[in-house]
Image 1 (tube, rainbow, N blue to C red):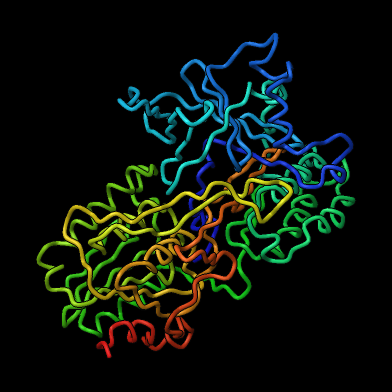
Image 2: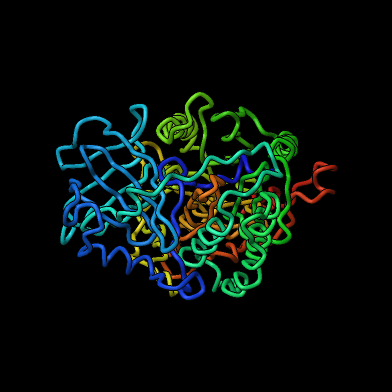
Length: 498
């Protein structure tokens, strides 16, 4: 089932940075507003910034290239701020975890669990930060200090989710932050031919100081529905919204998994193994065929939601599945991602590393980093598949996909497309959302999310919005199939090679 609980696909900043917009049309947002990047750059010489004249200096302060964040390393702790031309909201303060590495790597997090790492030493005082659970770093560019409005501005107001009719807190400011975030960071307004400025002109006049919480929510939701994007969501005032590409089904994973398992038993499945609270399933099939299913790539351990715990469980599962004897006997492997809600890219790379004997480029990723140009992205960072240290299967792989193959499920498919031999993709086109999602908080305490990155295959192609098509189109989980124990996509994957 595609739901708020499941589509959290790599919400990397949810705990650390609750709100980060900027703004595309300054004149429309109010007289005197400048681009956020210009605002931060100008800060280097403005006394009103912390670290400038007459203000206490931080150990070091950077802005991100894209993402709209300011990082301040102060007193050994890492403070995160969300900046934009409309507001600046303080985010979380992360504490040091462990001792600095021999190479100077610093770890920060909460409750003794590392959530981000920081490495100084870039050109001109730059640095990189890495959110644990992401596939690539974020570039940090030095600035003179934290913007003074970040230091003096209040945190986002706490919003009651119990009263749909409560008066909206700062509704006009909330609208502007929401609109500006998409205008400056969202990766697909141009790709989807959505006139975001026109939507602002249409809806902003309806936002009045006395508008109700419910009315404001409905306005914000109406603006993003045309995006048809699973990585776009909004929650607050007792309501929630998650976008979907038109035509996407909403099928429960337990139902689809049970139907597939019945079909596998009919095909002679033996020795079924289950891991990660049922999110990972493996079974042996006759004639040296294996079937491996992933319904997510996150939250594998109920008592521990950290990435580290999920990776440990993934390692345990893959070590149990990819034994020397099984790999030696396996002739083909079917990997079922047809109802996969996404998760953490590094886990998908761990899986891909069990399926190759040579390292190769999986994809590049980059953040949108120009508020005025929706087609401009920052430094592309290469993400590679590295062979695992244990037994690896290098024979034929069949990938089962559908419209419910989402986010990290899709980045795994993208990473496998450059494998040799490349897998056959069977089923239907994937959902078309690859970016890590940016989770934000609005001034009234509501939360929302969007995608701001671009993933490109080694051939330079992007499948954002469109999804990755199957090489062999086959119906997936139709009502007739689910009620009659039929599975043509799985049957096609298990068919003897031609």
